[in-house]
Image 1 (cartoon, rainbow, N blue to C red):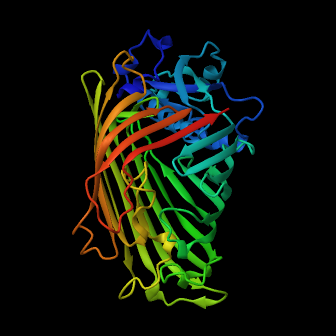
Image 2 (cartoon, rainbow, N blue to C red):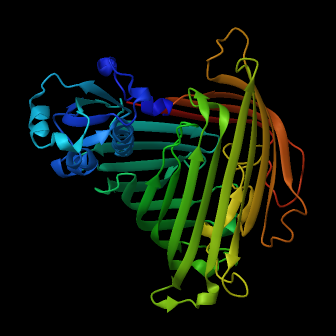
Image 3 (cartoon, helix red, strand yellow):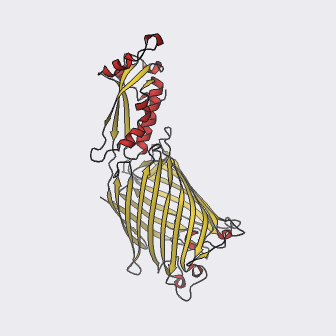
Length: 482
């Protein structure tokens, strides 16, 4: 019997050592839920589906009962409505239900009298804000975003989220971007660990006065996307983590316009509407332990794959199948702390590629290609400053050492960080490792769910002509309200 399973056995049956009597019969006479939200409870159909096995087969031995309710506990956690679920098996003081059972059991069967047991399910709801606002400031961008979330509106453990965002360009003193996103998810009644997800988004950007866009290539971008699929969750008791697997279909329309007559061949061929339909798959496993939002130990692994099944340009120009491609990218980071979490070593590895389904990837939209650069990507270089315009392959390596500042508590999420990172992008996988862009430096980092600060002094170690290096100070601040 595992530790998690043994937690289900309450001391109400302390007259018997249930841990050593796993075949002892139990009769589940009553199930009591405590903590379900009275204003928006789970629907009867969902509750019945979750507790179905315990309700239809109340007579079980100790081991089977523990297994059943451990599975029920996981299903309740999978709904996303509860931060913790505690289930105990208690002696039922009302034995009338057991007496009814005993009438139907012949003594000739030689069946041991079962213990009348009531199950108490304590549900703990998380504290979360349904309304939030975030402001972000960086060297060349200011953004404002807000979101509204709903939980269990339909009584089916459903979740809805609506987000809006706006970007301000301090160089042009204009609002140059806006976006809207909506998502809806619903667990399957028979299998709450699987959620059906529908998402939609719209993004509008004016790419003017940006370091990574040449003056002759300045233009505006619109992107509208709709996706639908299923997400599967698991619970890993050892690492106390929840791996996620998503698979679905995505339909995207891009529209690049307002080009200058001198626009280069990098963007101009994609002027106007461009549609893409893809099968998408993603896997995430995060075991990191944090102080605030600063990772101290564990690892995070992300793998994304997109298989493009059709593309069309203009009103009705369907591109040949050989112009389609498969796009794969991964992200791996590992953290380890020493001397009572005073020093943390972090390693990051990223990579990805676009692989043609035909002889070569003849038609890859600029918004599908890879770029590096910026505080959240490759420090020491401008946003999208490595691989300007986008390339088909990339990699990035990063090694950081962080330590707490003197006169600050060990659990403070403020750290001084020494970093080294390098990476490259290329149109051909054969040349992606031939050279690289690299930088080192210092960062003062503060990370909590409410505030993020990254003050970086970077020193580029390479000076390739195709890169947009950014030596000196860079600042990134993000504040979340409500």
